[in-house]
Length: 103
Image (cartoon, rainbow, N blue to C red; front, top):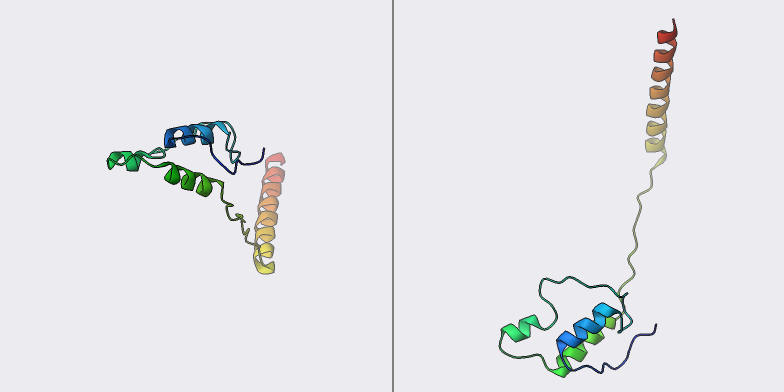
């Protein structure tokens, strides 16, 4: 679904409902729990948010997010050797323990 370029609602509550329902195209249809829902700060200040502020919130909601990459650390050769050595040593001890229990 392509994101809407122009929002047709009037209030920030309608915008929040549109975002949560997936109608703006930036997320799936699922509620988005928020500590302070969209427009709460403005209403608490006695200034209901204007349509322009709601459209600004929509533009920010639809803006591209930076790609998140995970840098997985790689093990250098001595560290790999150490891990292989410890595992092999453990297997040797397990083998000797198994043989000793058979005698």
